[in-house]
Amino acid sequence: MARNRSKLNEHWSSKWAFIFAAAGSAIGLGNIWKFPYITGANGGGAFVLIYLLCVLLIGIPILIAEIYIGRLGDDNPVDGMLNIIKNNKLSRLWVAIGWLAVIGSFLILSYYCVIAGWTLDYTVKSINGAFTHMTPMGIDNMFTALLAHPAKLIFYFTIFIALTGYILSQGISKGIEKAIFVLFPVLLIILIALVIYAIDTGFFVAGLKFLFQPDFSKINASSVLTAMGHAFFTLSLGMGAMMMYGAYLPKKYSIPQAAAWIAFIDTAIALLSGLAIFPIVFAHGLDAGAGPGLIFKTLPLAFAKLPYGHLFASLFFIMLAIAALTSTISLLEPSIAFLLKRTKLKRVQATMLACAATWIVGLCSLLSFNLLANVKFFMGTFFNNIDYLTTNMMLPTNAFLISLFVVWGIKRKHVQQDLMMTNVLHNIWYNVIKYFSPLAIIIVLISTIAS
Ligand code: TRP
Image (cartoon, rainbow, N blue to C red; front, side, top):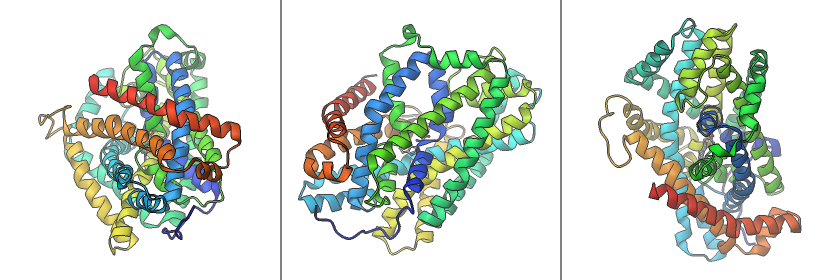
């Protein structure tokens, strides 16, 4: 296919740099905070099984498509889409995919940094031993007090954006790659240490059973939708992150193989987090289905009662912050690449501008928990609305458009050549993308809107 010379002046220095950066994007609050609590709330094993099927049957195929479009576009999501449109003489309407990607990643980032800020506060708290001798009431009050304290929240939220910006200001190989090759091993070592610690609680088998023994009576239509939505979120699909990282991927590497690795690493980390968290929770007879408070309330309480709980609680929150950081860098990069292309700014300046914009929009989400808590419209607070708009609407819509685009926008012959899959795999993938994923996404979208 006729392609112009690369529009980006940097690329990943190796296949593994891409795989780990993308896995870092995928591994985030979604794996360590959200996956355990939605698994807990949906009864465990059967939900995990459905989630695994969603990753395999819909997640990986769309991940392949998204990375592929990114690489084909060879630029930030908007200009990348424009490149593909021009080279293939397609309708300009397809550029919507690029805009949804750049705007969506920016919006997700703005509220993601708010929660990431909480993890920093909890890191400091746990290091200071704030959870020792805590009562359930005390833990509850601690969390409520944090949310009611705008100055403190702003402090950590700002630090988090600054960390993200600092890494990205250094570029792809000196910034993202260098950070990921330090952060990922640290995350993995901490997680393994936590799993070993969980084995030591004596409740490891209970945790295993909870995660892997399916009880289908706990499953209903809404759990299936939750599982599918989470598969998209955890793989960072639809919102430009994977598209952008794909654009930095040299043509010689196989996308399907990389996608399989990314999904595997992401899933492994989610399951390991579950294996670390549930035994600790069960060891104290606490409730696994506590919802979003599982990590910020139930878990600190459990740590408070365990030997060396102080140390392991600290490690846990450091790990959570690291996981969040490797995701926020992938969420900010599309905006920076867009600014670099459309303005005369240097990378450092573009990063500062993108960070400032994130800070302003994110501030509204942050204040949704305190000063603006009573300002409610549509789905609730500003935070609720941004979360709903991005995760529940923009993300599936764009994943849907991406599936359509790969099938109806690009000639199958080229797709097959570029993706270098065997005939059998190609046929399976192509049919999934053509029929199965759009249908599944439409069902998710309609039921979201209906409820
Ligand atoms: N996947 C990350 C998580 O599990 C979050 C994330 C990063 C994301 N980039 C994204 C979600 C892009 C949707 C789209 O926490």
